[in-house]
Length: 150
View 1 (cartoon, one colour):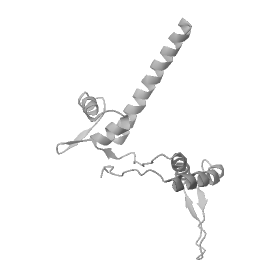
View 2 (cartoon, one colour):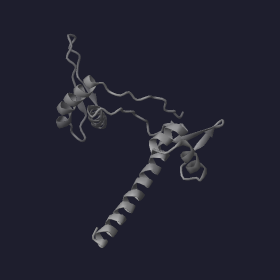
View 3 (cartoon, one colour):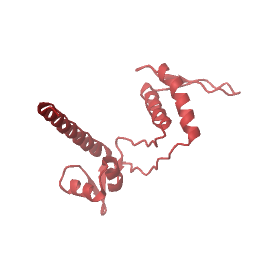
View 4 (cartoon, one colour):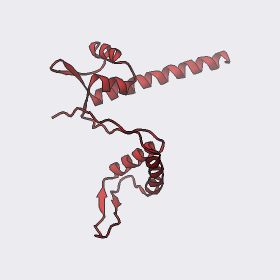
C-alpha cells in the first residue's frame, strides 16, 4: 500500500535549536558507520539501553544538524507518493510548471481518481537530474569566463 505524505514540518523554537546543537555535539563523534548505536535513558526504573541501526543514528544526527540551524525537517519515506503541490514544493517550481513536466512525461506519476500522485523517488530523481544539468551548465559558463579572462 502506498503512503501519501501529509506531514507538516514545524519550525524549531530557539530552545529546540539550542538543544539540537548540544545533542548533535554529543552524538556525532560517537557514531560508527556500521555498528548499531546504543542509547540509554536515565530514569529511576533503570531501563536497559536500546539499540538503533547505524543508519538511523546518522539520520538522527542529520535531523539535529538541520534543527540546530533553525530549519524545519520533514521525513518522507522513499516509497511515499506526493501530491502535485508537495512535488512542486520539493522541486521549487510552481504547481502549473510541475503539471507541465508530468504531462510531458519528464516525471512519472499516476492518477488516483482525478488527482495526480507523484512517487517521491521519481520527483527526487528528476531533482537530481536537473541539479546535475545546472552544475554542468555553471561549470561551462565558469570555463568560458576563464577563457575570456573575466
